Each structure stands twice: as C-alpha cells, then as structure tokens.
Length: 109
Image (cartoon, rainbow, N blue to C red; front, side, top):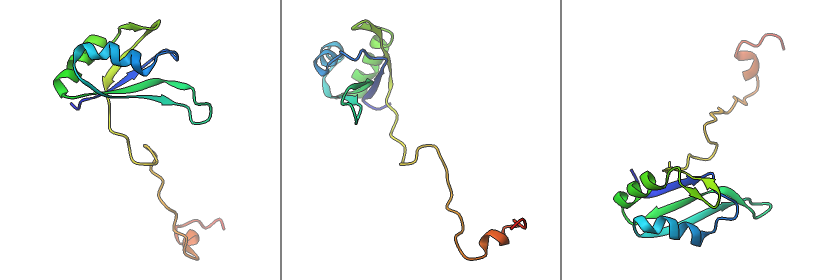
C-alpha cells in the first residue's frame, strides 16, 4: 500500500482545509489535492490525500471510509497509480504502407 488515498463522493463545498482537519486526526498529512474541472474550475467531487507513512494512510482509510463530511458519505480507498496516456484502450496503429489493406485479406476493395 502507498501513502496516498483517493477520497470520493465529496461535497462540492468541501475545502482543502476541511480535508486536512478531518484526515489530520490520523497522522501527518503531507499533501491534499482537490480535482477541479478544467473548463469551469469547479470541484469534481474527489480528492487525493497523502500521508507521511503508509501506516497513517491505512488507519485513515479504515476510519474515514463511509464517514459523513459536509453532508456526503465519503468513499476512501488506496489511490491507484495513474495509467499511461490512453487509459485502458489499446489501439494499434494501422499498417499505412501502400497495398497493406488488400494484403490483409480485404478483397472487397
């Protein structure tokens, strides 16, 4: 487990200070990131909270998951590493050489 937590189902009015106060009870919070929409600048309803140690992170996850904060029941999980650009899609590049389309057995053309 790493020391970064995903915090979901957040109220749009929850601030960084609110998260630091709530999670600070379980250890030393080193970073809080609230995701905002690029176009509107409004919060997207989730955040990442990073602790100094994995033990603090695990304790906070156990204690804060399902807790009500600003009228919303939080979902707290271990943060997963961000996937490479493209996400789970696996698009292979088509063969662009002349005649390659016919060579693949596409006799319709």
